[in-house]
Image (cartoon, rainbow, N blue to C red; front, side, top):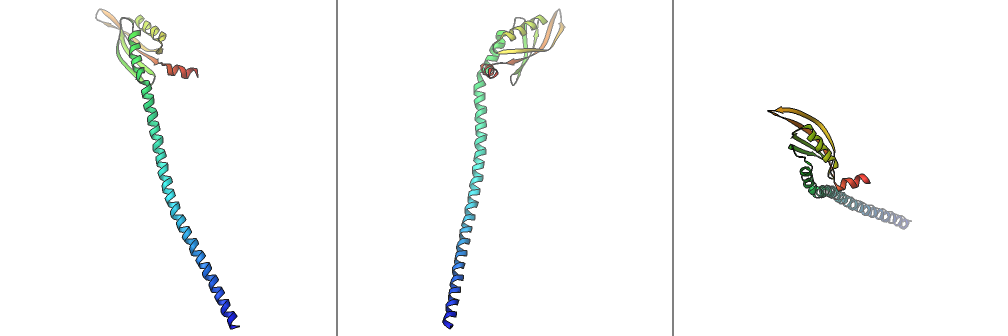
Length: 164
């Protein structure tokens, strides 16, 4: 009977030792997984940062591409303004905001401003002229019409977008 008790105690001790080993192995695996998870979270944060940087770079590239495409438009604007400017009309200022162009100038008469608007309306690169003001002023023996006209700069790209 003493041998059975000793055998039972040995079996219980071996079982406890076995379970203890299994628990410590599982704890070691859990710690390793925790370390790996921490490293993966760092990697994910780094990847997110790289993704944001990539998006910013792509946005910059898009802006640069748009600027490259619009480079010839300013040449067309100035060329077209010179071509459409009737005799007796002199420009004193030109300001562009987006596709809208503000034209300030002086004309010999208000009919010359009307001629400018008709020529702008007939242009392929300019359109939608709107008069903000025309003021006729006496300057010595002659009269001058100071004007402000707004117009839209058009291009082949914007015409294609309107068709779609």
